[in-house]
Length: 274
Image 1 (cartoon, rainbow, N blue to C red):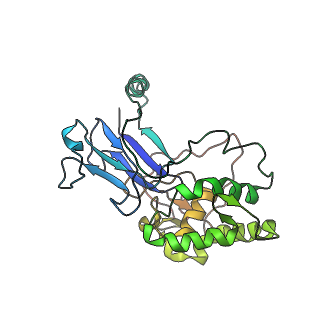
Image 2 (cartoon, one colour):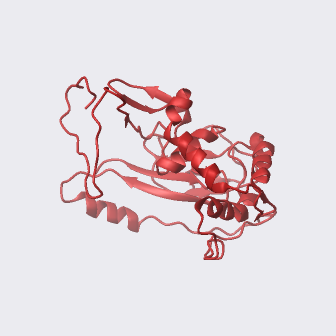
Image 3 (cartoon, one colour):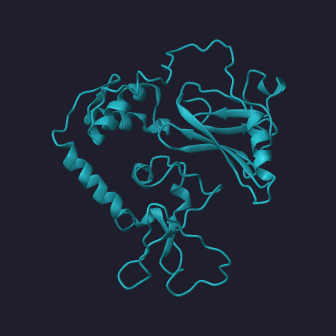
């Protein structure tokens, strides 16, 4: 079997930590613990590194500490397998040995509400932009900005959008028009913001590594991935080449709902980029 990767994703899409070969971390028990902003920065801290966590964590059988960017998030496992008839069974065995359990402890301060159907209630608007703001409102107080130094600016932006004290009160009359403008920006994202792109050759490009996966204060890139992608990994874990033909450069490619492109045995790039 190939590589195994456990990805840690923040509520707003930041891939702030990964447990796997790229981070030189091995299988074992890790403590996932969120604390008030201003202490350790979000990320993975290994016990074999010269980092002091406090609390005797490394003497309690833990391999390291995962410090989330907020109390809500996602843990996703990725396995690279080979078509040899045995790897799938190995993956199932690893899945059976993987678990997430709660730890008892004194955690002072305001506790975040658990994610449940009450937050995702059926009374949300059928209008997608409004629904996004309604969903954001109850989670915003417990999910600060990825960069804590940016918290005042993010709070001002949320308040201008109508989100304050865990509630959403509409401030913009025509969200549909605003949504159309955002989609236009996304459709022309790399020409409007070329600094977010790394140009390859033959009409291929990729997101610039410094704005991939963990977006920091680059909210435009976060927006682009939210509209067009799915939980993008940081550049040390994955690359996302984009084929972008325009005008007479490259071939326009189309796919049906039940189709996919398969590329194999590519030894030399052709002039059109395939």
